[in-house]
Image (cartoon, rainbow over all chains, first blue to last red; front, side, top):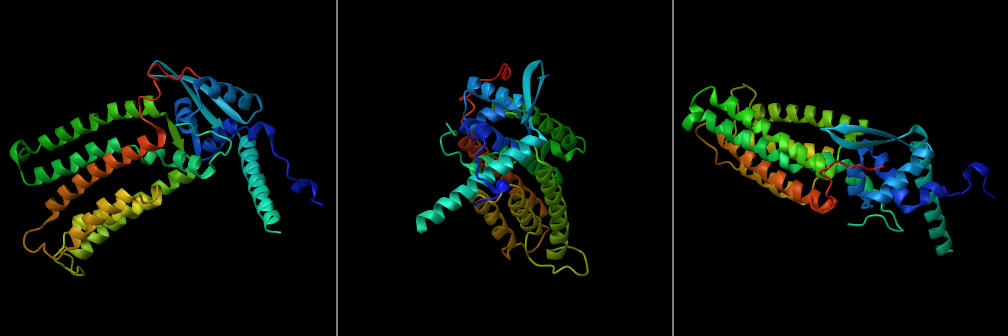
Length: 106
Length: 207
């Protein structure tokens, strides 16, 4: 039986593909704006906006709204908790994948 | 261009985000032009024979970077690279400077320890620098190998006897920098989609 800290529990908030993509992109940079996130994830403006709101409410990202050259610009950074949770989530997915591969071989 | 599906490609997303800053190839076009202008100024061609013309031309070329920056910010967004990437950038600059200076002196110079080979040290050193810095920062793509590999081979051909070929090397490097910029930008468009796909000229107004 697996010890509690090693339990394979997937984080439902992060596991949603759109939010997983956003957090994965943010984990490879210091900060990214709304346009860049839309470019990399391919999400629509509405979907991206909705996912970011959920992630901000959960404390996984920090959102700064500002004006650049008189145009609105939304800058997003991953919070310390967000960094831990996305790293743990990918780790869990990798473990799940290797477990399923092992089971398939047996 | 939908990238989010039931199987989020981790490596693809991470590498796209990490390489964005280095794929803004349009910046390389004015930079390459500057190299060519420097060579023409050294040859004292046309108006470039006047000392003040090259700095003035350099300012105009630098000003051309402003609309390029605006184009990338408005169409592809703003990113602050991670501390790790920034550190790699600093390492790449230091390695590049060392290779450029050391390589040029070693291959062909007045220095007593120079091999004094009949090669184009400027072209060859710069090609090595570009291959090394691209490898460190973004990973070498096919066009980097093709363009800079060709410049390296041409630079190392033992046909550069006679007068100092540094200026020809500068022209070669300048043209290669511009070509790299075009291909880097094409790769960026292939990775992130055409500028027309998103119309965000009025700001993101998101979230």
